[in-house]
Length: 191
Image 1: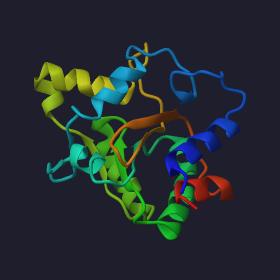
Image 2 (image 1 turned 135 degrees about the vertical axis):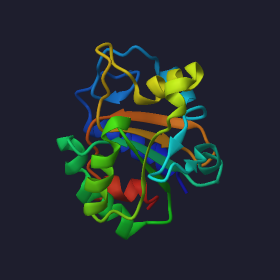
Image 3 (image 1 turned 45 degrees about the horizontal axis):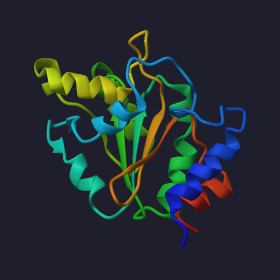
Image 4 (image 1 turned 180 degrees about the horizontal axis):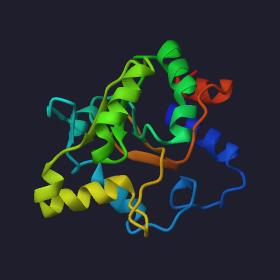
């Protein structure tokens, strides 16, 4: 069976045919303060917590033997909201195939993001970068890299990290993904 992440990335590349042939990050291209390598490495160092402050062991998820999708999400982001139908399609077609993690794109927006996310009826939780990023320099740098900080100090939403079952980050896609497209859903579900 072909690697589902590779199939999905190929599908994304075909859909983004107007994008440069060799892009640092697939999809929307913006000037960033951090490199692709720093963004990938941040997944091993960033602290994510839920609404009760309980940590998410992202390293354990990434080492679970299942592929993992980590998406930066915001209640104010029209592209994030446009993806909801696709995420519902994933939840229906292959809910156990992947580890799916949503992270608030701005920690300060987390209460609003969580409320909106919960109202949409998606079966996953949404997390935020933990408070350690305010007091620990290394954690703050990991958070900036994880967010893919732009030169203006912002974040591109949505941003998706596709992580293979081996734990390697195979792709970062900045911008809207439409998982309602049959070929993309099939690639995501490994069919």
